[in-house]
Image (tube, rainbow, N blue to C red; front, side, top):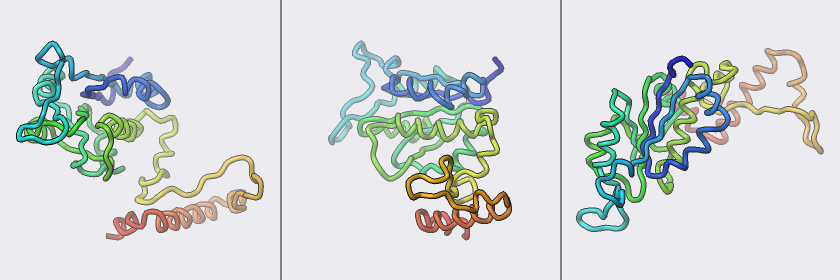
Length: 230
């Protein structure tokens, strides 16, 4: 197998959360084709005590537990190299398609999954290159958001998708949502597929798709239109 186009390391307290999703569907194909290499690192393997403690109470008091800087630091040192270090964090930049494209062009990505009340501030200050959020909501930890990021990035790596031309028409690739899609049957109950799609006139179909994509974007995500116009 040739050298992977993209190497990904994941630092987490719950490695089993990744086993299923990273071994199914497109992700499995990407690994089998040698386009991506993914390694999962259990931070508890880098704990300094027999109980494998990786979190503790916050200095100054407060609710919950905070992930310790030591295990994260030591795991990053073990990985080595010049990977781009990403902390999955609610205070990070909200992820976008453009960001996915940029990250898909890197050779090595390292994802650090926070948990509990977050990570020691010294991780933010000294051990990462970027913080990314998947949106203005809270999840139990950074594992599921990390899976979303990895999926969005890996599918953009050359050679991963069977038909890479499909990337050009997807939602967000042109700054808008996708146009409506239909397949068999032509009529289901009283719901019929628009006749234009059976016209054979590709220019007319393209015009209809562009118009409908704009209408859907205007109704569902008008912020995308404003962003394109600015």
